[in-house]
Length: 120
Image 1: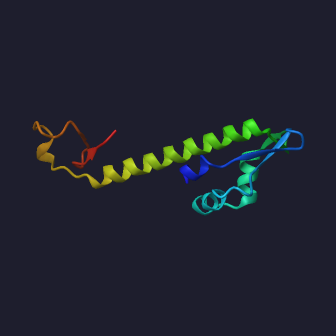
Image 2: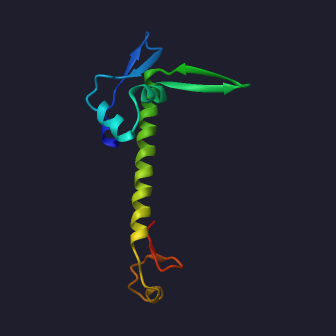
């Protein structure tokens, strides 16, 4: 998803005052499938912002540059979540016997009370 997102393009519309995702981009379909969203939802999330004040909400379009920054933020957040998931999965699968906690050769890993080694 991250690699496809980096190839997503944003088009300026209405004289550059608004933007929309490029619906003809060949990377769009894989992005939609991997993230589990629709074209409309992705476009809404990247090309519009919502302001709520005093019980009322207003939705405004953003310019191309701001939408592109939104794509970059989505890429970073997705990558971060994937990295955290991988680290948690690895940590959950590494088990070290308690007797190895004080011996050299524990590989410099921190050990939890359950005897699990923890990375990071």
